[in-house]
Image (tube, rainbow, N blue to C red):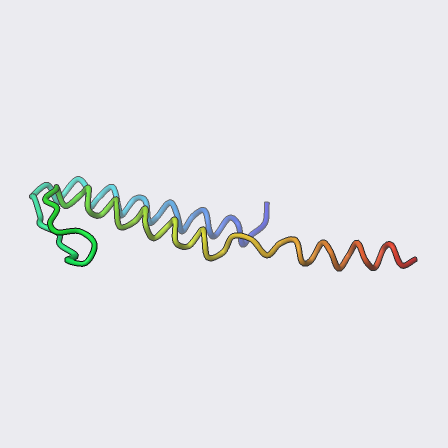
Length: 82
């Protein structure tokens, strides 16, 4: 297993552990408003934490996804030149 991948997995597990701890200890209702998009949402704080975490993970995935094919093109062009 790649060391970089192992560190990423450990980091994700630690973040998920923090998310679980926040969910267990923040049971009060909070109000969230973002006037241009959402008028007002009332929900438990734990659900809000999970939603923000999910948005962050999806954003990171979209930003880092793609771009892998440019490297394969260069290697196939080199091998076809021989």
